[in-house]
Length: 86
Image 1: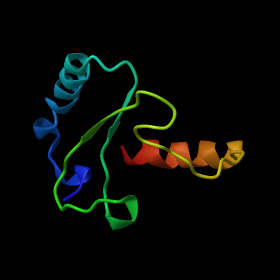
Image 2: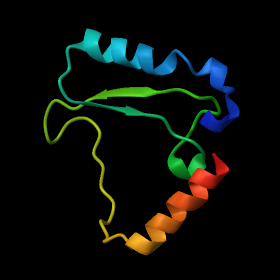
Image 3: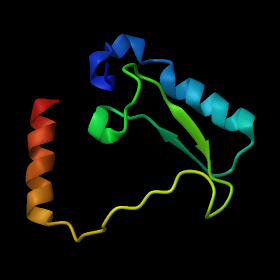
Image 4: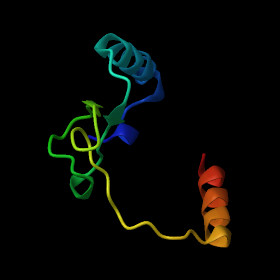
């Protein structure tokens, strides 16, 4: 199951709950992660969220991928295509 499989009316409480968890943790820096599909590191076939505190540069979630310069024309076209499907 992926995020897109859940009906909108069942997603209403997710961000408010995530916000409450973040506030209750007292953590200043954190990531909230949700994976969809094996290539995106989804190991369990249900929708769940990870609250990952980031107390310093070494601990917590490390994100690294090759940074590239975006092609503005291609990005505008992609935006238009996505907006048309929404």
